[in-house]
Image (tube, rainbow, N blue to C red; front, side):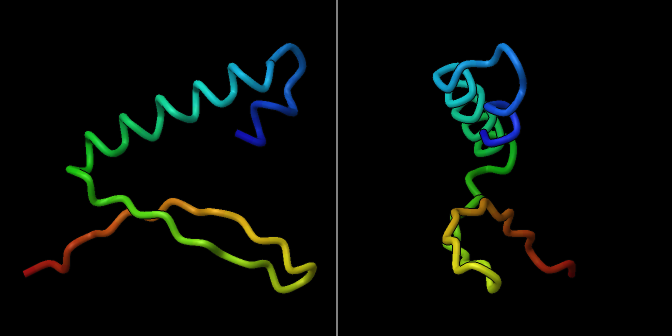
Amino acid sequence: MWTRINEKGVSNEYAQTLVSRTDSMLLNLTNYRLYDELRCRRKDGLRYKEKRLVVPPSR
């Protein structure tokens, strides 16, 4: 969402809508193997949420 907000002419509401659509499509395509992980940057301690895809081990 951060990338879209910093572009000229893109509103905050539209950026949130795009993120929501992308998340739901990714969940659908990956059969709900996405999860959120709360991360923290070492430099300034900023906390942010990150999406991760769980890939099963190959057999």
